[in-house]
Image (cartoon, rainbow, N blue to C red; front, side, top):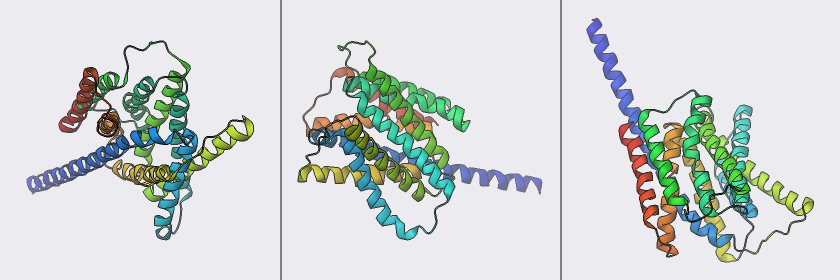
Length: 309
């Protein structure tokens, strides 16, 4: 009788393990799709910031996303738990910090250095996970992080530039910390709360915080805000808001119920790879040999983490 029970338990554990592995593969596949979508946004944003202030663009992008998600989901939401609302606001402020520090950093440092330092969130996430979630990454994930980090350096850095640390580099690092914390915070909150409320609160928090920041810049600091979008730019803002923000944030929050924050960070490290591909395809930009090697290492890092975990 005991043997039969042990056999049944073993079969049940195998079934659950197979199911969990299947769910993780689906989740990681959806997260990879997110990075493809984000890769397209670099081309769009590059054209938009010529006519729209970067902070204003963040505000408009998240306002469109907030309105779209609220209209779609509001009829299905009967109650909002205070704990979920609070969690969504806190996570939204972390996400806002990432966007703002990254945007301000670009005024003081080069795009390549900002991109590399921001990408270092792939290294920070396992550290944050160990301290906050009490979950240490497995060996394949650590190897994947190593490959991705070296790949990011080759892909993002221009080694002919001066290596002197600048103010923008420290601001970029703060942005990287914020993006890393956002991944870990979503990983902690998504399994415990209603994802719909989490997403709505994150979107509205970033939108409102962006416009408050704009107000401070205009009425307190006396800055002039560039705001001259045409019909083409409005279409771009719509794409950024609905597909590249509302849909992707929803998918991220749902997918992180089934995969680890470290896996998310490694997958998100492929974003500059897709950005480079779309830049080459649409804008005619070129890859150097170090950049091609870097892109290959990022993909290898992702595959190592996926196949060996």
